[in-house]
Image 1 (tube, rainbow, N blue to C red):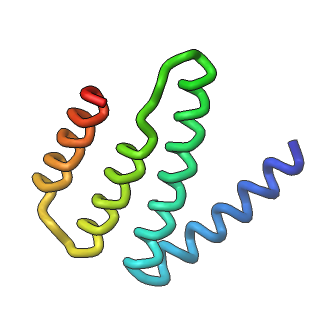
Image 2 (cartoon, one colour):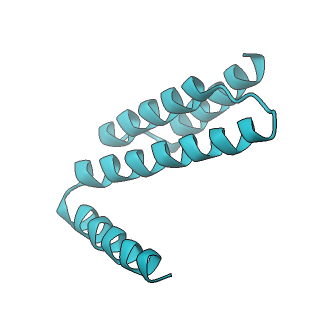
Length: 91
């Protein structure tokens, strides 16, 4: 339990530093967190016998990070997400 609290405090300090440093560091932090979440989600699904197209999720997050750095409209984010879901369902 003590290890988790210390890890959480370190992660919170890193997150706050990234949030207040710049927009680029904020996007990179969220991209890294999303990458870890995607990896864990894929492992959980594969453990239950469900195939998960990992490359589609990584590509979607990379494109959305790029769009966030460019400052694009919210509708474009939604279109990328819908496209990624469509590709993931057809793969």
